[in-house]
Length: 136
Image: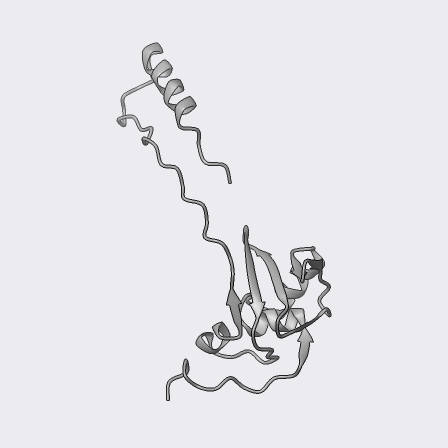
């Protein structure tokens, strides 16, 4: 029996949000999860969450980690860290797909070509105006 088809371990009715985030592998450590909660990067059912905020099946959890926001629905509550395939079955990921990156021409000059001439500079400025760099 492989790990992805193994039954989920029985869990409590609810648990702390920092413990659940760590157990389902959304954060590397429990202290990272608690720090994200204290920093205001975690919301449970659209309310700011402290590390001890309880989560139960059916709750929506939003976590902002490493510049991206993950939106997950709790489908199973666990307190102990489990393997990645089992952990992925404990939530439903509703995170929207990232917007496609606009790609334009790559602005490069030959190595050793020297400084751009006035004509080159105008052409570069025109291209930069037409294809602005993506904002983070």
